[in-house]
Image (tube, rainbow, N blue to C red; front, side, top):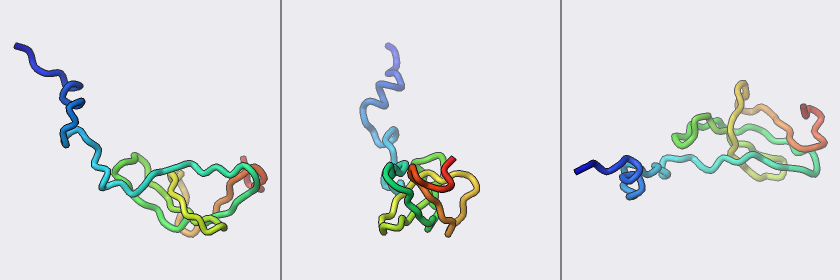
Length: 90
């Protein structure tokens, strides 16, 4: 008699193959501001076990806070801008 395939074991839904979502910091989303340039400040850089890259917490001028993937070379208290009318847009 043969063995069960790995995909069959994973499909069962046992805790061994489930993602430990209680260890995740939050959902990372790419910010999208299409109307104006919006400025923000990086408040924290976090390690999340659910992502392969570090996450950064951004506080926008509007008071909204958001998690997104941190690019290389950013630091806490750096200011960033995003949008179509941003002066530093590449």
